[in-house]
Length: 48
Image 1: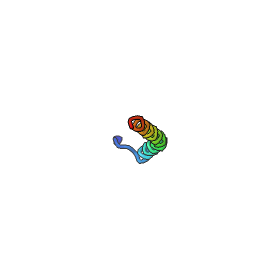
Image 2 (image 1 turned 90 degrees about the vertical axis):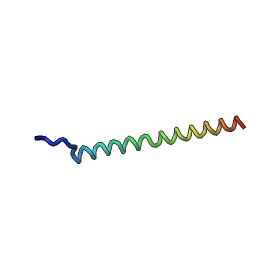
Image 3 (image 1 turned 90 degrees about the horizontal axis):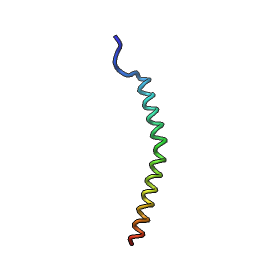
Image 4 (image 1 turned 120 degrees about the vertical axis):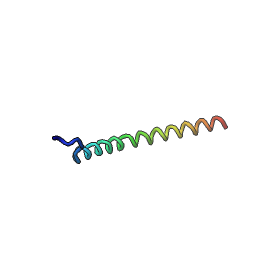
């Protein structure tokens, strides 16, 4: 009878893939946040 759980190797591979994805997406999200802040500042400047 085969057990139904995940092996440690499988879990470590998934965690590694997730870490790589987060490392790739972090700079993208920082750029989006900077762009949003710039847009908000421009909008506030035009309203004043």
